[in-house]
Length: 94
Image (cartoon, rainbow, N blue to C red; front, side):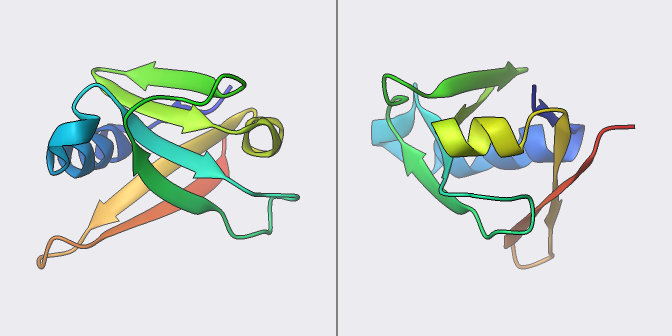
């Protein structure tokens, strides 16, 4: 299952805190047919019925069916630049 680094956990909580309607929601990752594909990230109020839910220290990430398969045994990391922009990266689990 996908794991989140401390940086990714902080980024997800920071992003969702900016959307009052998604206070109990999280970041949804969708649309990946292979590890090399681009993923679509969105802030949502709740997971879709078929989503896999990954939680870490209050951060919630919802994976659609394709993303759950592709990201199994991967690590979600994030970097936040001085302007507050977030860039997520997926790496192999150690």
